Image (cartoon, rainbow, N blue to C red; front, side, top):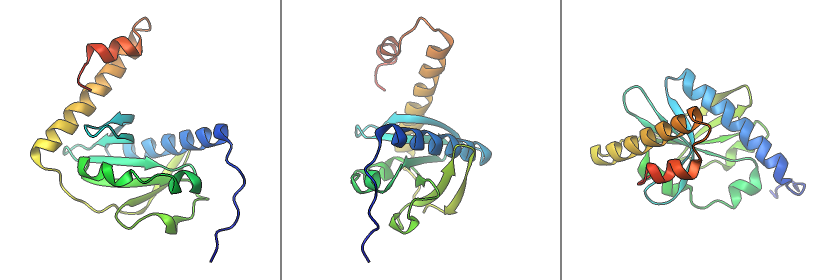
Length: 165
């Protein structure tokens, strides 16, 4: 069966859709006891849309897809799996859910909240990888909090100060 034609993507609409999905997903994660941050670069130089840390030290990563073209143009998502215990895709309610691979969990979100549609498989990280990812996430979160508290401190200064991220 052929896909229905999609109108050309509007970059501004794509960004707004992705921001809404991220907001709702972060709310869901908080409700599940996980603390998440957006846009964390991993040791393999990939950038996770959301990385979250649970109360027991579990690491979740979420890839946000604003639409089918965004999903189809992304072949890097398997590169996130070695850096988390659970990997998810977060999409909006209009996204065709059957496109999401079975190797990932599925979250459907809007700007106000989200729901887990399919649980993500669990593949526990090795202790060394868990420590490295947790430290990277904690340092990035602390750097952003410090930068937010000091309006005169630029992101580039923060990155230089916290080198190694």
